[in-house]
Length: 166
Image (cartoon, rainbow, N blue to C red; front, side):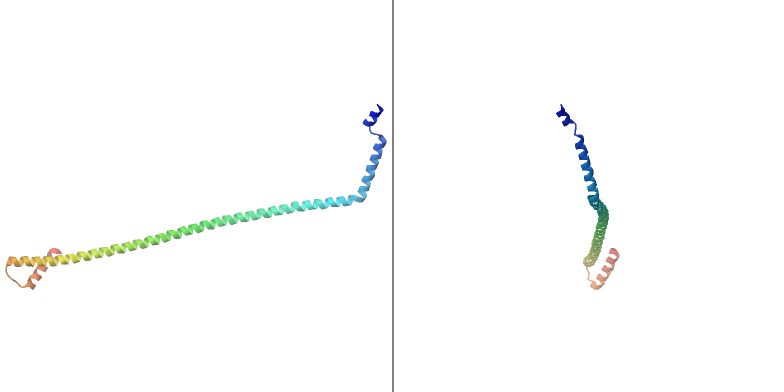
């Protein structure tokens, strides 16, 4: 059993030697390396802090750019709507101009047509009047069976027709 006992429980001298070795190593480390390790760790901490600060600054700058781009997008959309509205308004004005011009042209053609109709009516009346005068003269000559002065007959019939027609 003594063999098992040695294996289960460590030797006290070994423990003391190991503790003293560790203490000496710790003191040597503290005296000669501690400043370098602390300096390295401080530099590393500063670098990490700088990275964090830079990341925050970049995030803030990105947020600023995002806000600015959103503002520009809203402005662009507003300008787009204004341009579309102006184009619609211009199109409506042009449509109204075209409609007004077409209506004016139609009104002029209607007036011209009415004038032509009135002229043709007047011409037809004049022709009808002439024919009536000729017919009336012929009828009057036949009725009277005598020849009268043609100019006097025409004047008398024209006066009669003027009274009847008008």
